[in-house]
Amino acid sequence: MSRGQSTRTRAGLWITVGILAVALAAGAALGVRWWQSHNPRAAVVGESPAEFPAIDRAALDPAQARLVAVVEREFADPGDGTKYSEGVDEPWCADFVSWVMREAGSALENPHSGSWRIPGVYTLQEYYQNAGRFTPIAADYRPRTGDVLLYGDSSPFTQHTNIVLEVENGLVTTIGGNEFGEVRIHRFALAGVAGVVGFGRL
Image: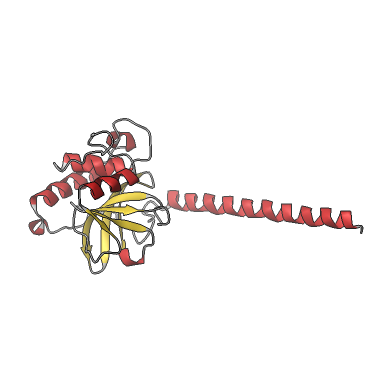
């Protein structure tokens, strides 16, 4: 075999390996999607309970109680993403947080437009920082009902945000929009989740 033939053979082998790698990755992604569609309570992390948690309402302050009432209603009868985004078709996790806060009487204010709706996770963090209500994950802070969790790209959720319902026995329970395209509850050990940026305090 000549040197040119050997080079072409190695190149062909690498191309074949590359095609197989892409095919395997695509197959894995399709497999995850199939599993999610056939497992309606699939969780990004931890578990995704099918029922709203039994939160002790007597222990909540008025702002927390209003927020829990709103998210319980939305969990029972959720809308699609455009309900929470003023009709805009976009990733809607931050829209859901904004909509819930407004409905609960704790409206946010977009630092760029002044609107109650903050459609971006980075802008949501900017809002909480400007309001003096942002606590980074590195701080020794135990989140409370109504706090907003903010996640970076490296988290299992990728860039995302959701609302804390309760923290108990080392587990945090959250509710969020655009989780598998729905309003979902997740329960997980916060300490075991990478990529959490911090909390927007209620």
